[in-house]
Length: 129
Image (cartoon, rainbow, N blue to C red; front, side, top):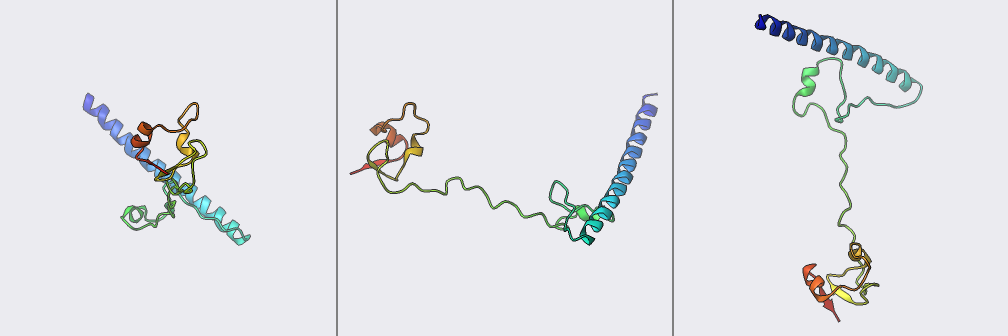
């Protein structure tokens, strides 16, 4: 009796997948018609899925092949670590260091105060006179 219930569940899963695929094709067809209408009015739109791929109504198997779809342009990256402090004395410490630092180096200090020699060596800096 268990196998018949499991078989029914498997058949329903297959039927559900087929229905979802049919519904997806219908909705994509409507979307492409709407985009075509907008393009004829002078607006340029493109239908792109969340992963940066262009959905297709025909031949979805080919879309899954490696390299079949160009991904949208990726972000060039963050700017973390691209700014260097000026080679002047820190306004909090009142002295220069090598490598240079500025008041952003003191953001974790409460209250803000000059670095001690121990803190400078821990951060890999030396006092420059």
